Structure formats: C-alpha cells, structure tokens
Length: 553
Image (cartoon, rainbow, N blue to C red):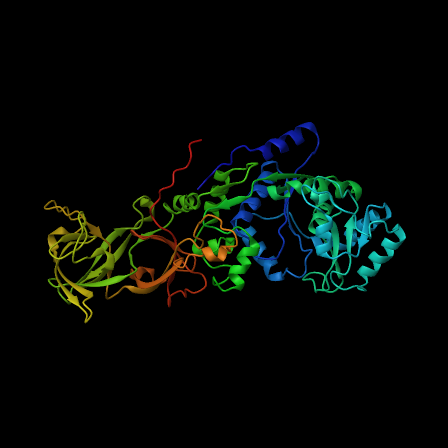
C-alpha cells in the first residue's frame, strides 16, 4: 500500500532553511527515553523524523535520552530498536545521552563559572513553592547568591557522592520573575545514587532533560530538533542552554501536535500502570497501543505509516478517531490476506441425507478481490460446524439464516435445510439435523430456487481446533471526572476468548500470518502463544465493518 506524504509546515521550514543557506544539510533525530515501550504516538514521531530526513537526503539518528537511571532499562532500549526497524527505518547513528555525561558536566561547570548556575539546598517542594505561579512571580532561593567558588566546590562534592538523593541540586540562574515558569531557575542536575544501565556506578549526579536535550542536539549537529507541542514553553530554556553553554553548533527546536486517539491511553506512565497492575498481559498485550502490542495483534508497518501521513503534521492538538487506523489496516490487508472460513462459536450440523462414508473436496477462492492468490480445496462431509449465531429457533423479521424449516446456502457448497434440533438437559440447542440438495453445488450452474442467506462452515471431521481472541477498546471513553482515574474507565469486555475451528489447510499457519475469516474480520496468528502445527491462537486485528470515510483532499 503506497501512501504519499503531503506538504506540511515542517517541510516548508526545512525547504526554506536549505534555500536561504541557514543549513546545508538536514539531520533529525528520534530521542526516546528508555523507560517503557514505544506507543503509536512515538510511531508518528519516528515516521516524521525519518521521512523528512530521507526526503532531503539527510540523516536521522536514534538517540536514547537515558538521564534517569531510576526508570530506565536495557529491555526498553532493545524493544525501541526493534520497533524502529520493524516500522521500516534504519538509523544513521546510534547514540546515548549517557555518552555525553562528561561533556554535560563540563558545560554545567562553565555555567557556574559564568555565574549562571548555583547549587541549591532547597527541597523539591520548597523549589516548587518558590517558583510561584502564572499570576505570582517567583522568589529567589537562599542559596542563589553563593559565590562561584562555593558552587564549584559543592558541585564537585555532589559528583563525588558526598550528599544524599534530594539533598542538593544544581539550578540554572536565569529570572525568577520570568512570565515563563520554566525560566525561573530550573533544576539542571540532581543527585541519584542508582546504577545506570549504560554507565554503571560511574555517576551519582544526572542532568535533567531540559539541560541535556539541547546539548545532545548540539553535540550531534542536529539541524531540526522536532518535538511535540508540550515542549513549546520549554523552547526559551532550550535556546538559553545552547547560548549560555557556548556550543559550537546551534540547533533549533520545532514543535508539532502530538497524536491523541479515541479510547486510547497515550502516556508511557499510564501504560506502565496497566502493565505493573496486571490489567493487561504485558507491554505487548494486543489491547495496548504500543508498537509491540499492535504488531502482535496483527497491524502492519505499512498501515501505521499510511495512518501517520493521513493524520498529517499540525500545530494544534486534536483527537483522531480509532476508526481511521482500523481503516488503514483493512486497506492494507484486503488484497494481501487469504480468505478462509473459521467457526469461532461452533454448533454441530449433521446432514442426514449425506452418506456417512462420503466426502469430497470443494474449490474456494483464496481472495475474490485478488485472483492471483488462486484457489484452495475445502473438505466437506456429513458433519460440519456452523456459527451458533447463524441459527435461531424463533427468527425475528428479516432473519435469513438457519431456523427450523428454512433453507440457506453453505458458502462454496450446497443448500441445506434445517429439519430437527437436538437439545441438552437445559433446553439449549446443541446439534442440528439438516438435509442437503446435491443439485445446488456451488459452481455447478444451478438455476432453480433462490435462498436469501449464505453462511460459512467448516468440516467437523477434519477441522483444526483453534483459540480466538476477540478484542475491543481497552478504555471506555467518558467525560473527564474530577478525582476519577483512567483505570476506572477500563473496559471489562476488552477481551473475549472463544474456542472453535478453522479449515484443515490452516494447520501449518505460522506466527504473524494474517487471514480474513469470512464474516468475522482480519486475524493474526499470535507470535507468542501459537505453536506451528500444534496450537493455533488467533488475534482479531479488526472486524470487517468499516464505517470510516477518509476526508476529501
């Protein structure tokens, strides 16, 4: 599925920068913090950074902003690499913020020598109060007027591990009366006695994101540092760090709208709550909006890329309907996925006038919309399974499926008529007795009577048992309520597990193989719990019903 990106304000900026000579090449970066798995919002950023650089024959770096050892882990580093590669991109350089810790320390020392930074003894709560509010200016810390010599000595002692976590911080000395609260002497270093995944125990002080990020961009020569809108108010601090740290290269930050999707949590912190609280089965649970969860569910990189470009790049936040993403996976799979029959909630049917020792193979198209996918042979015999929902004893008006006395077509097979039912001790129908008309075989040119209903089926004797996982939205959208956690909006029906059967030719289906099950939707062979040739587990990617229409361009 090819999907061409449209023009956007970032492309216009880059084109103008190249035309004016402001830059002579383009280098972008994708800079995740390795404190969780990436979600689809990150996918938009990955696609944007790599595609923009590719268009202008530039480079894109993958950089891990690993400045908080308490929350970061090598597991997350490896998962992020896998996700970027799966989306179809290869980085031109792989970097870690921790590679620059010595350089960042030296730049902090430079700020102290210039009188632009000081060691503060105040607690986090005291600093928060001193910063004031949008209507109240901040108040200077009692530590603000320390001499350069005192600050240099204290900062070195911080590095040597003489103080406890939270006992001291290094703050930039900017303007406590600034209308931008981010400029009111922000903390740029804090103490954390924790083992770092990359540097071990070499450091016990770590730079804050707002200090580290611009320096990383400058060190790597990033020309266009693309961030989401929540960092717009941080841009003055970004520029201050670049200017006051006297970096050789001067990067610039640009902001775009982050991705929000209905019925979806787009926060690593919240997603971690779901994982840690065992509300889901892990970061790759197919209900999760993580890239690994979407991949396990059966979404394709092509569909996600097309979705990202359809959303476009805007300057104002908005919320996208989940139906748009579902539209693109249907579009991507409709010509790729073989069509086959699966009965997920089986009801047994005995065709009483079909001989017990008789069996035949019927021909069926693998994908009517793509004739190049050819045909397959489907076994048919006296006993079959149909869907429980395809039979009722008391049909409502316009019900065209099977009921006592009614006739339907079995897809790719014959007409059958329901004559009798078998019930269990509770009165539930557990088996149907039907007759078939041998003159009505599909493809044989039967021109007699018509039937209004066609249902799918599988051969009971040769069908393969399978587990089907049917997913719905994990979050039930509701109006925000004060004091109510997003966990209170979890959908108790987000997962239904049922057991049924698939055609026998599915026995060797491999993990991540995708199929369209007639009338049920698109399904993916689960890569974790399915065992080729032994145990089949299918995740429903999306139903067949598509009510979404793309806006006209």
